[in-house]
Amino acid sequence: MAKIPSLPDIPEEQHSPLVVELLEAIRYQMEVIQGLRDEIAVLKGNKPRPEIPLHNNASETDIREYVKRRKISGGTRSDAGRKCRDTFTSLKKNIPKIERLLLAISQRSSSKS
Image (cartoon, rainbow, N blue to C red):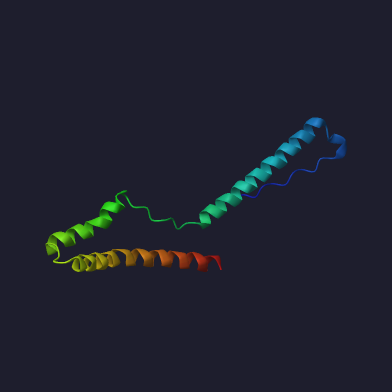
């Protein structure tokens, strides 16, 4: 990117109200431009974006595993068996999510250090 040029030094005797006003406007615009460049630099530094699924039915995807297991097994004989099946299915679904979350948190904290 090109550097912002410095303002010309205009002798005091040539300072009319219009010249003073124009110089103030140029200084203000230079500050705004520099602020925008700083903001662009910050935004370019934050390249990793959160993963956004292409669909919004994550809840349906989450319970699909339970439904498939229930249909395949044909149910259970006791409440303890049902709780056991649901617990293991829940662990199977949630442990990878928790691992990704913890990994993302540790990467953010290590990049700040």
